[in-house]
Image 1 (cartoon, helix red, strand yellow):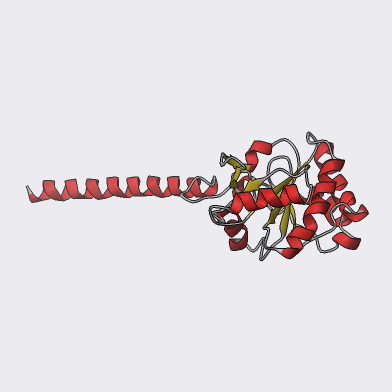
Image 2 (image 1 turned 30 degrees about the horizontal axis):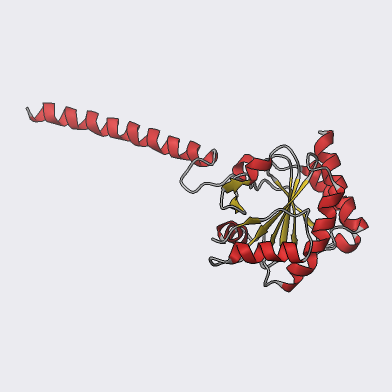
Length: 222
């Protein structure tokens, strides 16, 4: 009887070990695929040395502070809302490269940069490239403040998107992509990070246009 119980316990221990190993393997696979709880899309973007080189070569003059990355971080799932409060992500703009700019009405450098972003947006067909400004004014009147600013400054080429929760910007800060406002990230057509910029820039200048043209050309050529 005791021998039978001992045999059963050994079999049970072996079975538990097998199950534990299978569970561990599933967790490892899930983490590798970015499927674990809280996993972002960073693992879905491969390093892109050709895009890194193209942007690094183009970034000069007034855009010399632009940091070409193309290191694998992805933002297709970055969440925000439109002016009506409808939930959106950057995946809604998949298929074309993007300039995503984080700004707020209380940020003086942001306010000065917005007309330049408006001018840049006017230069490009929306099917080839898009400027996505995400406002970070908080409070119940945050979106109305942003809307009033865009109207008062006559910036018709800039849509109103907002993240009053600050969750999207906190995600950038957590990975040291952004420190303060304004902050800009350039993305490829799949929402993969290509370059980042801390602070404002004259995006409608010859240097800014050179960077955007290089991004569009590099995406189209592959």
